[in-house]
Length: 432
Image (tube, rainbow, N blue to C red; front, side, top):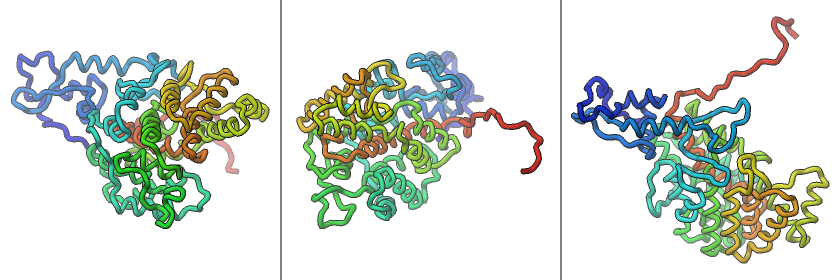
């Protein structure tokens, strides 16, 4: 799958000047991974390698390897106590702490402020930044995805179109089963613009053209600008598109959320990248996960219309439902992603009514806001439908699912296969 330097390196010996360095096999054994995974760590900046004496294979600094071992063994205690019986998966992608979320050690808020979505996604996959990188959709895959999306009923949800687009693109890609790292990266850079391009443009700007015609966003706006044109008919300002893009960066990943775990299980079985994303989209299509922002959007819309978030919150509670957009299982206080997004939304006048309502909702309910509430402010202020937040979430998180798939492809196959605890009647029993 991944290229590994000559297998004879272990038998070639290590020179006296390299006594403190480890061979690839020794490094793999110390880390508890396959040799291929060692090189995957190198490509993502987690380890540094050096050619061994004679140039036959690579060596690794023992102290650096031990530091990585300690980091892998450090429980998510740096984050929170795992739930009883929870599956623990070693990952170098996301660290969640009480008041911050880090991607490969970088604060997600700082990354969103400094880098565009495509730059951030590519960096999450490779550990390297390519300034100004843009992803392009291959015409055959885009045509297939658009045909599948366009064949669905007009009333279907945006995420329904995304799921159909993924399946159609997979069928149109004869190289989908190639799980070599560079091939998977190529698929990822193509799939994201395919997903966005499969959605129809909105409003009068698409009038007189095909349902999936070009966008009114400038090319330099990249995927964020293209996605804007598919979620709202309003002409975007540079500040609004940049805020949407920052939200997408914040949503790149969030450790082992339900959809990400589904993605890793599929990758553990060596499903191709399209199937990995399809599995994750299935888990995302749930009221407690990707669809949570829709409830927040509707609550804020009602609060703005009635001029009172207090009354809107009271109605939700009276119906026996939870107030959407509040609280998070991994953050004791306000979701740091929400806090950052609220700050950027405060600079957009069109979002002022929804932002004020969001703060009033949190104050009335006495619970901190999460990113779904902030996403509801963005979608409402931009004139998008309630389900638009789920589309933003799905497109952004696709990059995170691919990052986890890349990690999982370097692990032992089918390792995410928990044993069931049978609680039924003891056999033998008669045939019914």
